[in-house]
Length: 124
Image (cartoon, rainbow, N blue to C red; front, side, top):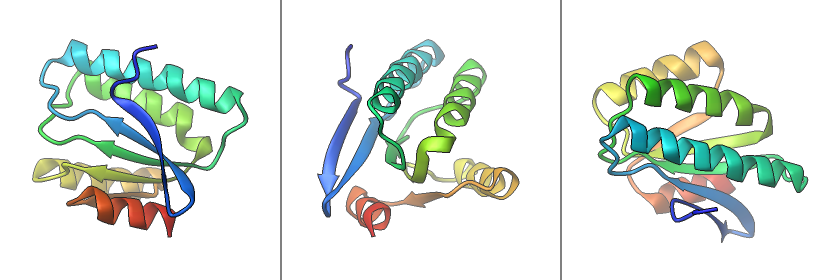
């Protein structure tokens, strides 16, 4: 599996899934990355991992249409196994959508300006 955009790092003694959705402007490319993430997550779940800590980088990506649908479906699959999610690259309209999603769906997702702050929050 091509996992250039997916890795697990250790921070403060805890494992964090890093998902790089950054700089994707073509919907089909975004959907391909979501499919890779789904397969990776399924492997982790099958290996007995749960309580995922996730850092997703959405910097300079455009999520709409089929890409938004794929991301929602992927999030629904992983939600039971996810403890916390941090996001990078959430600005402007994306931040309004995130606030609405957190409220409506009772999610534990928080935006950050840099990876260090995000990793510290995830592992505190």
